[in-house]
Image 1 (cartoon, rainbow, N blue to C red):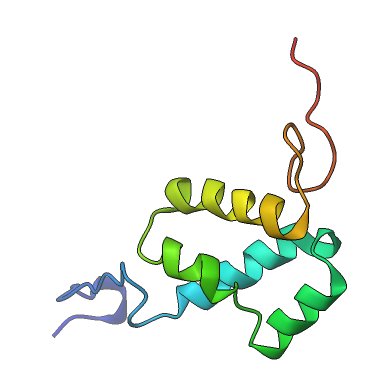
Image 2: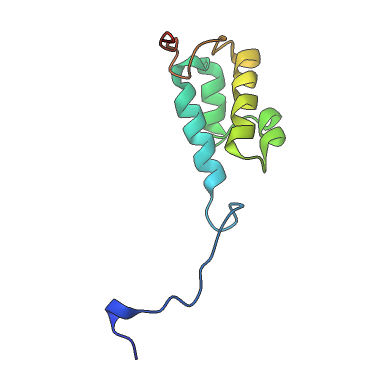
Amino acid sequence: MNSDSTRIIKAVIFDLDGTLLDTETLSDRATLEAFGDAIPLEAREKMRRNGNVLPWEIKSQILGLRGDEWIPMVIAYGREHWDILKEGEEVSGQPPPPSV
């Protein structure tokens, strides 16, 4: 019998698709928080009533994609539908620092 300090790992579970942990909802909330007040109040309220999830219009396009694939799509959606994040701006709404 092993003591507590020498336990043997018998199994490892990887949840890469959000089946065990609802990482999709956390991702939506983090995205909306990053956009913050740049999203018009009416749109923020509608998403809040729907559980703080992204609109299905964009959500259906990004499901199953990696972050580096869906982030540009969400930013493009925000530019088109919420008139935010003009070219050269970061999510904070501040322009990036000048290049050296």
